Every structure is written in structure tokens, then in C-alpha cells.
Length: 608
Ligand SMILES: [Fe+2]
Image 1 (cartoon, rainbow, N blue to C red):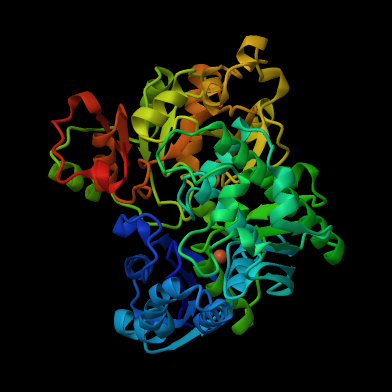
Image 2: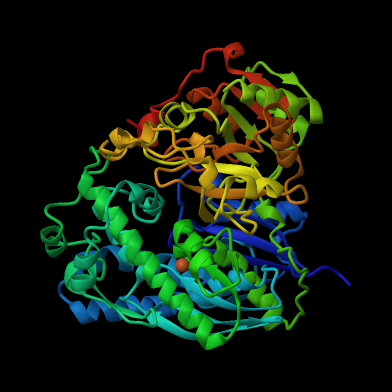
């Protein structure tokens, strides 16, 4: 019997992606942004599709089905109804949106035919069904409750239900324009960050502020019920028909206009961030309690953009009613490509699902392109790079030694990660014990805001030595406190420091990964899913006694994570990364020829 291939696609909103299944097994998945080098690229993911097909050695004619992650006609219906509802107020955004819809979004069948030369059947799932499928089918659970929360799909902005065996069912939804994702995005916009990608920054900024606007948000903006359902007061928002997220009433409530992007952060933004984070966590907690009560199940699968809020996830795990959580690493819309493909395999084709207890089906999210030593060497030679070949264990020993000397190392190894986090395949690494590391990595390597915390990659078996976390967190989607005995309390003088001035206070014996509130966004690394990365951390532990590294994604601010060896070399040369380990090759920055820039890359990535 020949293999059955199913291609899933998500596109046209943000973060387009493709995913390929072979006989139900996920064999490849990638986001289009990594190939086009445009962050959050929403265009038809032709390069991601080509990569998926190439990696399996097949053509479009070999595909049994193509799946699209939402239903464009339903989305269009929402758009039309919304505009008719508020006409003529939304005319400006209507004029902007409709031609796009008519041109691209409604003609997906034709796009597939033209771009892919695919003549077979295309199937469509609803947006939250795709999220739910991406949360449940790859999970290690035979049966689980499912909760999906995002900005908006067709009509739904949140949904819950149950997954069992090879099918799932959604029971209830919250509908547009009441949306937790869009409420959070409104504050992202107002605090001067980019909607759809800056939400992470708001979450990172929150611990610097006080929750002083929580009452105002509950009083004026959100009517939150005990069961976690809610209504938003649209008088404060502009996303239904306008081109911005917030309006004059929002400004009046919070004492002035939105922060101009890149301008100085003030206490107001920190307090706003803390306040919306507090509200978001409360909504998630109430939703989770309802889902638990209604389904009677004690395992929960999460997806949708809000499931990337790892502070809320951490609280859910510590305080929530569920015993176990599994969160899809590509929880945003990219993961919809994976979800729809699995829906076709399990529901449409009726194929059984094999569950391995304790092990998910994501292969550590290492589903993207990889490069052979020959390919890497050719790239390095073409760049005029100076490098030496160091194999396997010797390379890891060298890199561990460099890290122990406080050097910063670009680490490029194996298949690229699927989803927004770097997990040790396309990462920049540092020593978490170093008090200088956070500021140095933020300002000299990532060219990003100094307040942003870094995440630790910790050996799975040592997570209890450092953090209050009782379970695995392989995809860096859970935040937990640093162990009390490792915390260094602030002196009374330090406590009086204002906001970001607290950044340089050493708060634990692993200061580079300890956030201002003594929390850390944790990745647990186990040998099976990530052997080389595990062995590298183990080597660092042998040298230093410390079983973890600082892990940040291999990119600069505003740039997608690097995909190819050429991307990695370019990023290495543009920043103050000291060494680059790419495949079996090691490069010392000091030995490289001078880097010649073509064009203004700082402007391209909106750097200062
Ligand atoms: Fe979504």
C-alpha cells in the first residue's frame, strides 16, 4: 500500500504555515516567515509547502488531500455583517479589507491549483476546530478536555470541548466581538507594542507594574461572569470597524494617548501591562474551572494565541483544577495547519490515533528544515567565513567551555523548530549564572528592550533543583517560580528602585534567567527529544555544576528566527555573538573577515 500524504495550510491572517502528514504521522511543519524572512508573514505559504513536499520527496500530485485551517466564507460573512452593522463607521477599513478578501482569501482552491498544481480535494475546517485538533491529536492523552482561546477565527474567539480517541467535539463558543485575545491585543497596541507579536512583551513587562487599573478594566470594559464567559464594552475599542485597536474613550480612561512605539516606557505602561495580565489570568482560570466542571476530565489541552501566555499557563497548572496540561507549541495560527491535517486524517478518513502515554507526537517540535555538513560547509565557504570542523562530543565540550567563560554562542543544530520558540535547534546560548548576561544579551545581541527576561533550558531531571515545577515543560510554555532557597531577597534600598532600574538587581544564583518577580519561563530538556542539546547542557553542568543554559531565539528583534546556515552566519556577524556553532563547524567572531552590509538592515528590522 502506498503512503497517504495530507498537507495542512494556514494563511492570510498572520503567521502562515504548512504541515505534512504521512499516514497520520507529522513529518514536516514550518512557518512561511522563516523562508521569506518577513516576520509573521501572512501570504500563501508556498515556500513552506515546497519545503514540506521536498522533505518527503513527493510532489503535489502525491497528496491525498489538502486542508485549509479555517472557512474563508464564514469569515467573510462575519466581516460583511460587522460592516453592515456599524455602517458607515467602518467604511475605511471595509475599503481596505474587502479587495484583499476577494482577491486572495475567497479563492483558496484556485490558489492551490495555480501555486501548487494540486488538482485533488481541498477540505476546510473551522478555525477553532483546527486549534482544538492541534491541541488534542498530538497530545499524550487518550481523552482530554480542550480549550482554545485567541483573537478571532470565523466567529468564535474561544471554544471548549472534549477529545476522545480519534475525534473531538467542541461544545461551546464565545463569539466575536467579545474576545480575550483582542482585549489583550488592545493593551499591546496601547502600550506601544506590535499587535500579534508584542503580546509577549506586555507579559514580560507586567511584573514591573502594579495592578492599579484592574478595577477600571472590570468596571468599564469587561463584564466577566463566574463561568469565564464575558462581554466587552465596545465603546472602548476600535477593532470592529476601525484601523486601530483602541479609541478616545480608552485614552481618556488611562490618562492620555497610546505610547509611541520605541519611546521611553513609563510607569503607566508597566501598570497597564500588569493590570491586563491579571485580568487575562482571571478569565483563563474561570474558563478552566468551567471546562473542568462541565467535562469532568482532569487533563486539559490548550491552543490558540492566548495559550502562548505562559504566565497564565503556569498559574493554571499551579492553581487550576486540571491535573495535567498539554499545550500545542505552535499554539498560534501556524498550528492550525497541523490541526486541519490531523482532522482530515482522524475524522474525515476515520483513522485511529495511537497514543504513547507520557510522550506527545510533536517530535520535540523539530519539524523544520535541516542541513547536511556539506551544505553548511559550502555556505560558509561562499561567505568567506573562517571555521574549523569539530565533531560531536568534542564540539559540545568546546562550546560548554566557551559558555562557562561567559562567551555568547549561536547554536544551530538539526531540524528547525515549529512554533514561535527556539528550543535548542536555532538558539543563542549563554551562562545563566552571569549577572551581566541579561543586559548584554538584550542590548548587544538581540537589540531589544532591556526589561525582557531570558528563558532557561534546564536538564529535565534537574528542574526540581531550580524551580517550583512538578512537570515537563518541553516547549517553554510554562512560567514557574525560582526555588525559594535560590532567591536573593531585595534589600529595602533595592525595593525603592523604580521599575526597570530593578533590572540589574541580582535576584538568584541564576540571575540571567530570573525575572523581576522571581519567575522563569522554563524549557525542560530531555535526551530523547533533543540529544545533542541535552548533552551540551550536561557538559556545561560537568564543568560548572549548573544544569542549565540561557536560551534565546537565534534572531535579532523584528527578524524571524534563522532558518538556514546563511541566515545564521548573517545574524552572527551583525551582532556581538562571540562564537557560532553551526552543524559540526565552530566559528570565532575574532577570526572572521569584516562583514559588509548591503542595505540598511537596522531599518529593515526597525532597530534603534
Ligand atoms: Fe487563531
